[in-house]
Length: 328
Ligand code: F6P
Image 1 (cartoon, protein in one colour):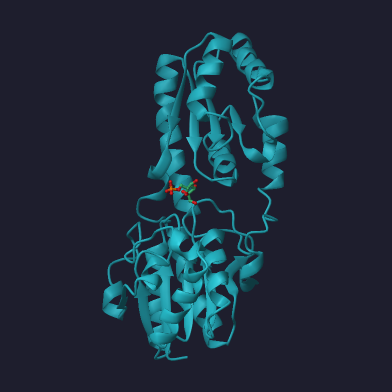
Image 2 (cartoon, rainbow, N blue to C red):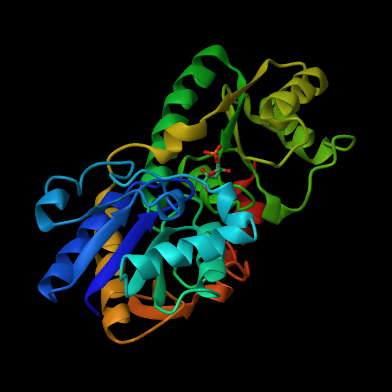
């Protein structure tokens, strides 16, 4: 292997820069050149790339975002897109491509593999932690801390005003981040897809615990963490419905993209360093269509085609605890 391509794709995640750094440093150690494609797969389609030398990755491990930029790439979903991307890789003599992103990005990589003679390796980078084959994805730990910081702050104002707050967290279709942040933030309720769909015409199971908490314990603040896409019309609509039903002012706070930013926490820098370095080792070992993952403390390859299977359940112990004891 003489030359590796790397790109970051989909929703950026804190720690992507640390992964790029690990890839470049590990490749340099093995006398392998690295080319970085800009704006995800768009860089492949538009031949927008730059050589990545070790000095390019100085001073980036602590930075959020990605020096390569990221994007979603509709062009890759055309018939010609994957063929075109593969042609770029062949033209530039890229022996292997490393894609840092989520399962959507890996689907794009699989489409390119149909036309590409080289190797493709994935590195899981998304705040959603919804990729099979690795206990944690790069960016999740930082997003969790960001969400907690926000929940703690909202608790102060909720307490002062004696309001109910809904805090909406990202996760796309996964409640991983919402469940963890809700539990660690001491939320009174957590709403996430894994607990079943919400019926706007039957919210009594949410309303009753609020009423109990107010009547029995005189709770001054009440925080409900809501995973995005849990309620038709979003958490603002749910806040309005609850205000009407309970008769106490209920506000929604949508954290949004703030969860994707910021300096990666130590756990994400370490994970990104391990997975980035391991991805290069997988390339050197001749692996193809594998994702670099870490399961129970062991680095291992996982078939790229299975990363979106959604067999990664959110922590069943926490789910049980929250449903039986944590909800109040
Ligand atoms: O996958 C990461 C993520 O931040 C999801 O949590 C969220 O649903 C989505 O990306 C938002 O995408 P965009 O930045 O394109 O609005």
